[in-house]
Length: 280
Image (cartoon, rainbow, N blue to C red; front, side, top):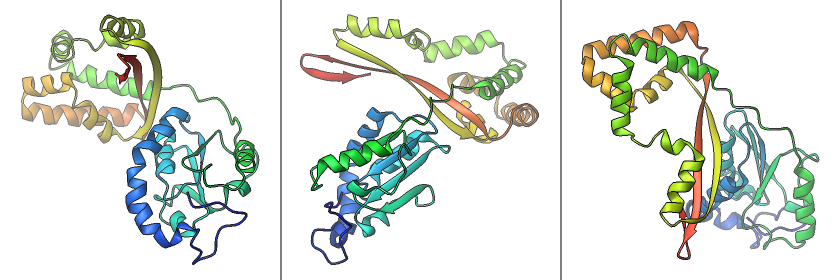
């Protein structure tokens, strides 16, 4: 974040980051990428949400927010440094503005999440800056419900065709051999109990759904990395496998729209023991 004043600093002003923009973007932004990513993860913007990154610099937090909100989301990045704002990528998906924190060019309640990393220590009037951020921050709507019907149809199609080659019970047995605790740890109570048994204290469980748009080929390539698919491929051989994949794609063409919404639901566990914080 460049030092904040009533207006963005003109070119040549030593207070601006413009003169060191390349080094800042290439070194400092890279160094802070994990931190800004953690910040966005803690904010947990909804899929399709609107996020404002104040004091964006070269856009590390904005880029993380773009990934979190998906293709349906909107991310804006604001910084007093014109040169740094020009380094924000991808420019075709992040709305850019040169402005100070105390003079944000947005209507009230334009965003349902606002992030600001290493900003308040720069601003002459932190109260005014915070007031602007709060004004821009509103609740634009509840997160849309998880809808994985298209993916369920795609997976049922995959299983129907796979079952013509190998009994479903055989694939289930093979998958269980590789992933013996897959179903067990999908239950939050069992995950908490296992961590408690291991001596992990103060466990916090958080569930999140990650959504993305995928094509039939992308989805099939992903599913084919799974245990059932690897077992099926090894069992039926390369020629039959090729025919199987072609058959799946052909049937998906008639049953599932393209692209379609893919949903990955994850369960995070965070706890501590012996003064150290552990994540699972």
